[in-house]
Amino acid sequence: MLLALAACARPVPAGVTELTYATPYPPSHPFSRADQRWIDYVEMASGGTLQIHPVWSGALLSSDMSLEELRHGVADIGLITPIYTRGGTHLVRIQSGFYSGADTIADQVAVYRCLERSVPEIGHEMSGLHVLAIQGGLLPGVITSKKPVRSLEDLNGMRIRAPTELLAVLRGLGADPVNMPMGDVYSAMARGVIDGVVAPVDTFKVLHFDEVGRYFATLKVPRGAYPSRAIGDKAWQRLTSDQQALLERSTGVWESALADEIEKGAVAGARAARAAGIVVHDISPAEQSRFDALYLEDAEKNARKLAKLDIDGLDAFRKARASITETGIKCGVQS
Image 1: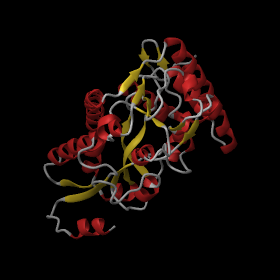
Image 2: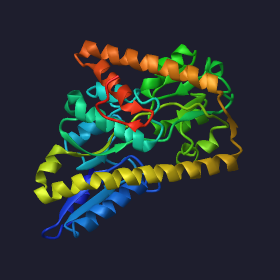
Image 3: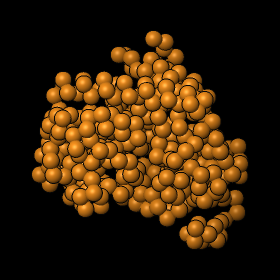
Image 4: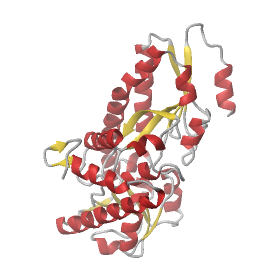
């Protein structure tokens, strides 16, 4: 908060609007490099009349309360993680498990856009915020520290950090899954609190998992897209219509920068893994097919459970699955 107050206290030239941008990541992280590219674009496209003041490394927003903090104006713009938020984003969190078959970042973002346009509950859960970027990602594998994973049976008894949508699947395979912020995984693996993590190859570099991991299993774990950058409504209302239009146009710039930096991170991560002597084990096609079936079965179960909250999760599940076709992502396709 002191940093925010200090930013506000700096004199701003007449005719210039300054917004704070908060992220839990340091400037060197691929996400932050993409953020800086977006900042540069906005400042240049506005002719300098819109300035973005970044606050890196988690000085303002937390990982699990970022949406509420942004709604209350702790920062103007921020990196948000609704898939890890406790309460209030039930469908946004669960829908991230509907993406099996959407293997590229572009396809993941396209599926989310289909749901965003056709499922009103998603907009309701994101109320109070104007989403500025949707983020997909690399398909994760399984990084372990002591025991390799060559088959699904090897997960039995392992304590693995995993995203919410994967917890029940891993339990069914005999693992002991836990959900924690990725920023806590390094220390948890180093201390032996967890045996591994479901994570993509770029984390060997960006999160230094090459220092605490020893094995990497190439299990293709589906992953979804989600709103990842947003501006709070209070900050949005302070902007002129031209400034609002500029930020709306900047969405494509931010999403492209994120995809580019994530893919660069994959190359750097693979290089770090090789240098560290990480042992890679390929998962057989039969095991992959078995995992995919379990994953989608659980995703549908989770969608049905949302009915208890008066949310038609099954409708969202069916729309997501129908949009993923052999010839690409197509909104409005009915199976």
